[in-house]
Length: 256
Figure (cartoon, rainbow, N blue to C red):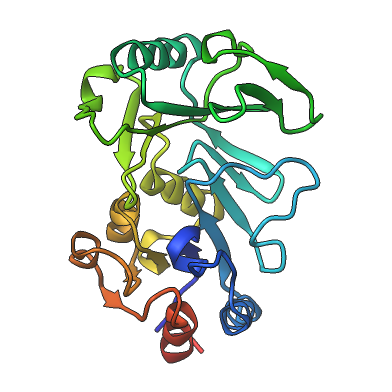
């Protein structure tokens, strides 16, 4: 099988349940890089702050997209930024708080993040902390709003969206609100345009609902054994679970 670019989701795909990357997976990805393949990652996770260790630090990394595709980088070069305008984000969070006061909302608005647990805005670069409510946050555009529902609330987030926002629900039931263009399939398309590689020469690995469209537009979509049936239904290939060397098994079988 010929592949020019490999793209990996992180949680429950590249990472085990213990949030580690196995030695065999690391070796397999490095071997692909040695064969000339472009290697990268598209994750719903936030960008690590300056100096913070990150999961892929010991792996080849030609590109990475954070916040599901809100911030896309090739090396140190920003390819695209897809954020929620500050005023829209504040209005969404305010409306959610008013209607569902038990809902827990966390927000990333670089360089700041805010968590309901601490009630503090934290500058991820300087380390500065500001005690504030969610409506008193620094005036920055927003990469991602994370919403954890109260078990008793039946919420339809569609009513809170604007023409510039969308959301998805993760496998654990958490809702992620993002700019409508901060989706993995768009991030992958922008990356392939940057490297001048057709999507047909891409192999994508994923496990969750927000990976589906990325898996579908890639030349080959490889779905982890721990994915749910909806995600598995779009797979070109199924592999073992993230805890049973699913990535290294597939790479060694088909690419090395």
